Amino acid sequence: MTTVQMWTLGIGLIGAAAWLPHLVTLTIKILRKPKLTATPARSCEIGFTELGPIFNIKTALTAEHESILIDKVEFRILHESGDVHQFRWHEISEVKGQMIVPGVQNQPIHQESEAIAVKILPTDFKDLLFRNRLESHTQGYKKYEYAFNRERRRLINAEQFRSSAFYGSSYVQDMQAFLQSQMIWKKGQYRVEMTVHNRNKAIAELPKLTFQLSDEDIVLLQANCNNMPKLLRNMCLTKQEVEEHFVPLEWHWLSKDVSSVEA
Image 1 (spheres, rainbow, N blue to C red):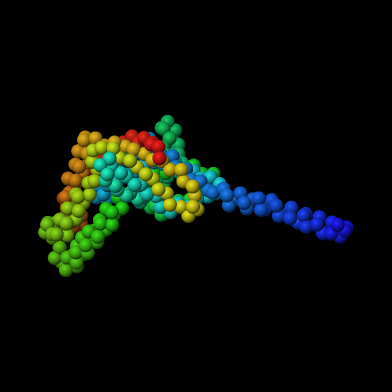
Image 2 (cartoon, one colour; image 1 turned 180 degrees about the vertical axis):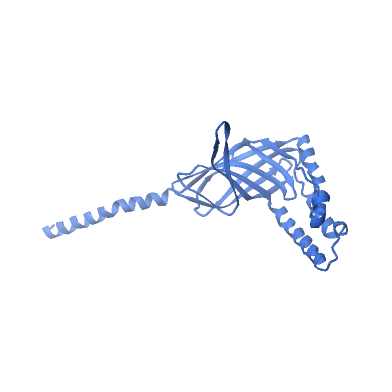
């Protein structure tokens, strides 16, 4: 090998070495996928209102290697009988800080927001309360609510609206029957499978949970069905009638222990 060839080889090796750190970094970035970990609270909240069956659970989220953008969270809830129900996030409550009042226990400051998207940074430890509704109920409720409001506006504009007569109409009675039919909860064990949709194609370490409902729990939730006629009567009232005839509603909620299970 001549001196010129040796110099050429040496320069080439130096140039290649300059690119080596960049190539190593790029390779690590490709091979090391982002990771999302969800750690649930020890209890969940079960409800049934005009918004349908409700499943709320507090969860801590952490991200590794890079920021992760979450655009949907779903909970697949399976009863021991084989019934399967799909719940989807609708609202998020996040602890943003503490309110310090001398002589009084510190109170957490919550920020409520519609569930659209949430970004988890690698430095974050996000403590979120997911408020979830039954997806099929939400779609059905919108249809009845639209028909109810359209007919109510039509009668008001025609100066033909009477709250008692409207309450007896098919628009209200069909909506009432639909709402009362949405009581899906029943006695037994439920299994919960969480799915997090994100734009990073992150590896997700998600919990699988179980909770139990008793006969007494079902009696309480079933009692919420009695609120549906009262709710609709309230919705039929005119502004002048509200002060005298409005009926306050009390909804029963359950706080149930959850247990983690193997995948």
